[in-house]
Image (cartoon, rainbow, N blue to C red; front, side, top):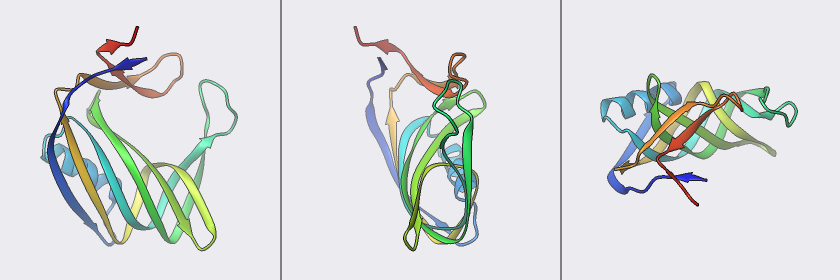
Length: 149
């Protein structure tokens, strides 16, 4: 087990509006505010999104399966922010639903907002972490500066 210890820095509330890209706008905000590490809580709705809903088979490296959702889905979720190889790396997971159907998974590049998504971003300071490709799993994982004995 790895870990890092820090403190809470700034706290932001953000609204992303109808037809904007949730993932692009969150990334743009994090870069603009120079947030290196943190967590994002969010709720709202999307017109459409691409969601990775787990692996096709429970093997390493995983081969993800995807669902495309369209037509206005409610969503609630959270994301982590760590420095990555090309700037802040944001890893977003959500539970999203429409009618009696619910999908849980990782939002990927496509995510068009329906009406609005409200987010609270909590910055962490003095955290020593990076999200880097893990050779064994083939997944980008956070790497921390300490190991629990």
